[in-house]
Structures are given as structure tokens and as C-alpha cells.
Length: 544
Image (cartoon, rainbow, N blue to C red):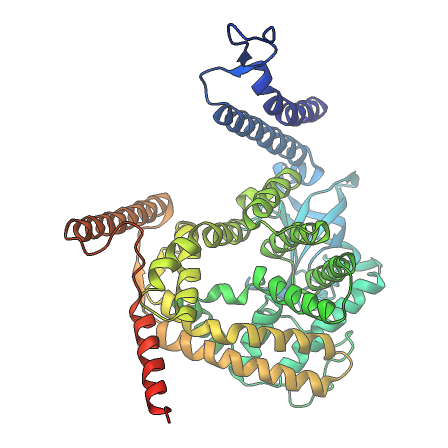
């Protein structure tokens, strides 16, 4: 069955690649009375471009269905799925961890991690598997390292949330156990040490710095990072480290969500844009050739991806960045919309589970909004406010136009002051992020320098904390939850867009009727008038 689906998938890809290019010739006819014997072709009345787009859309839909069906069949036939259908229970597994260990939100568990199962043994029957499991463990079993292979015994159960195929819980010290059968590679060990040494350095900062600096830098809030007492290099060398107040951290996280700036605590395209800009400028300063710039940016992207905490938004940003590197190597201008389209297509093709990932959906929707709507929103706003403020507001509004329906599915509260909050945060985010990344790079070798850089990053996150405290809290709009709420947001956005378009059309028609402005006539903004007045005034005052 799977072989048949794969064959159909390959057939659909070939059809989608070949047939649209042949449509103009297949759907054309010879005109009557041609002087050269009728060798010239003339298209029929249907729109050839529309047919080509429709053909590509149909083939893409069939490919998506085949890919999703194949993934569903593989998951349903997996040994872990069979064990869950039998009721789960106590099992023994061999699994490889694919994410760092973090603090667990579940009562009775201290840490959590994600892993891929290699084999599962239940009732003395061992079966191979490729399922993903989310592991919860108590302090006695919190010795997981990313990239390691472990033999673990615990309770297998159905997942209550998340994308994992199953949950594995290790709580019973008399029955549950874990044993590392293969140590992580040198690269994984080095990356893990750098992360933990950086978090250890941030524990010497103020309350907000201990929470926000790791979140802005790596995508994990300080209270979510699990630091074992032993077994890691660098831990405990700073006697000034202070524990994080859980109540304060939870209240601060709620304020960030209510203010609409929680997305700053997730690694996305902003990190990659900053790193690419710095590497490109350095390469240009050194007069490196184009291929060397492309290699340097690729290495920087790969290094950044390894250092960040794994997330679907990081995957999207890394894949999209590689398309930009390909354009740089070819000497062509990067096209964000085309790169994003290819990123979404290939990501869903190779990992259909991303289709139900809120993180991947929010990341893609925000970029789509910025690419498609930024210029449309910025042009009228720039007539009434300074350029930097118009840029920040336009980016926020463009991203929220497409992400707000998805956010309502996750939380029915709509932030009221998200646009002012993002405008206040925009000037300090880049500085704080760069300082945090620099601290991450040096904390493992020079903890004193790492602390200084983390402190500078904490100065930027202090602005974010003040902004979230003032504009967050109860400043949210209650909204219906679920699909009705999502449809309501979509309807409200469409109504607002139509109202703005109608008002602009009415004003333009009225102005044209009164002869105030001719079609295409340029009219200076109030900001340009003020700038001109200042230049004339300064010239008069400084005139000899």
C-alpha cells in the first residue's frame, strides 16, 4: 500500500512538472489561412496561465494527500501505536534524544525531553519503531543529553497535547530505569555545554534577566531550562547564581502574552537576519568572493540552528535562509515570497506532521503577512508618522493580520496594546539579541566576559519587561474561542479592510470632484512640510 502511494506521489510530481509546460502546445490550434502553411500556433480562448496555475494547484493537493496518507499509514503500523492500542503500560525502549532537557510543567515530573524510538519491548517482545515520544522523568532520572541513546523503562501512554506519538513517564524508582548506551557525539556535547554554561551565567542577572535573556537568545525562558546539579561542565562555578522565582516568572510570561510581544521569546527569522547581515558585512569588508560569502552565511546558519533550542520556527527560518544563500551564490536578488513558498512545500512534503504544528503555522503566517502586506500598510502610515515608527507599526500589523486567527485558536484573548508594545520593543530587540548571542558564544570559555555581555542583553530585556508590565496584565479583549472565534477574526479583518478601502475611495473621489488633486499628483506629507520648514528656518538663522 505504501509503495503504491509513493508511486502515485512520484507520478503526480512528474505530471505537475511536465504537463503545465506542455499545455500551451496541447491546447492550441492552427489559424486559418496562414501564409507559411499553418506552422504558426495560436492559443484557444481559455486563459493558458489560469490553466497552468489550476493544474499545479491540483497536483500539489494530490501530492499533499499522498504524503499525509503515507505518513498516517506508517504511524498507524508502528509498534508504539500498536502498544498504545493495547492499552500502553510498562515498556522498555531504546531511544535517541533529539532535544535538550527542560523543566517539566507536569506535576510529579522534574524534567522532560523529546526522543525517537529505535525499538520497544513489551511483554518480552521486541519490535523496531520510528515513533516520537515525549519523556517525563523525576529528578532521579534527569540525566538526558541531546544526541545520546538510552535504554529506558517507564509507563507508555497517550499524549494529552503536543505532536509526539506517545508519552513515556519515569517516576517509579523501583520499576523505572534509564541507562545511557551510547554517548552523544563531540559536537552535541560541545553545544550542550555551551547552552548550559550560558544559562548558568544568566542566573547571576536580575530577576527579569534570568527569565528573559535565555528566552530572547535561545528560545527558552529561564524558568524552563533544567540545570542538573552534577554531570555538566561549568555548573556551580558561580557562587552568585540565584534561583528563579516561579511566581514572578509565571506573571511575567502572562504579561508578555497579554502585551502581544511573547513572540520575541521564540527564535525565528530575526536571529537569522541579524547573523546573515553581520557575516555578509564582514565578508564584504574582507573583499571575499561571492561563493565565500555564501559558504560563510551557510556555516553561520547551521551553527545558529544547532545552538538554538529545537523548534518548528527555527526549522522554517533555517530552510528559508538556505534559499537566500542560493540566490546569493547565483548572484540574484532574494525573493522572500518564493523562498517561503518552497520552504512550506518541502517542509510539509518531508514532515507532514508540521501541518498540525501551531509554531510552524504562526511562523509561516507572520512571514506571509510581512511579505504581502507590509508595503500596503506602510505607505499610508508613512504620511502621518516618522519613517521608523511607521516601519515598526507596519511590520506588527502585517504579521498580526494573518497570525491573529491562529492565535485565537490557541488563546481566545486578543492583546489590545500589541502594536504600541511592539513599537516600543523594536529599537532594543536587535541590540539585546546580538549581545545575548555573543554571550552564548563566549560564556563556556570566558564566563566573566559572558556575564558582561549577558548583562548588556539584560538592559535591553529590562525595556521589554517594563513594556509588558505596563501594557500587559488585564489589557486584553475577550473573544470567542475555537473555530467560531477564528472565523470571527477573519470576518472582522475583512470588514476593516473593506471599510478602509471604501473611505479612501470616497475621499479620493471627493477630492477629484473638487479639483484639489489631479490623478497621480504628488502631495507632500505633514512630516515633509515640517522638515522643509525646519530647513528654511535653520537657513535663515545661520545666514550671515
